[in-house]
Image 1: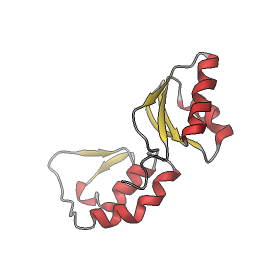
Image 2: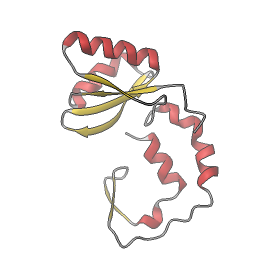
Image 3: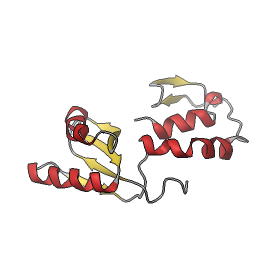
Image 4: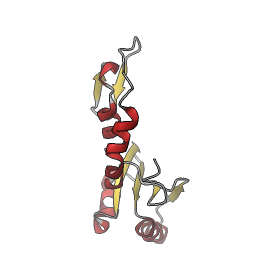
Length: 128
């Protein structure tokens, strides 16, 4: 969505979620934990300048930090600006039940794909 483009960024850190939370805590509102991909793989996202500061801090203490090649900050407060746009864009989509089981990382449980409406996909984009 154009409303997100150019406003943020994302960085992959080779640390656990607890360490990532510690690293971003001084940047509240500017950088958030965006995704937990594994025990030592976390993506943070937020304002570009705050991310540059974080990357420099990580390099200084030997934590691997790699930029993700995007110019937006998924799974952060920045996504809130496109909530209405996303709802409009997806309003005609009618989800149906699937024969293949679907495990939602948003709800942390198995869900009927007929529930995957615009609201679900907004929560998916906004939530960690």
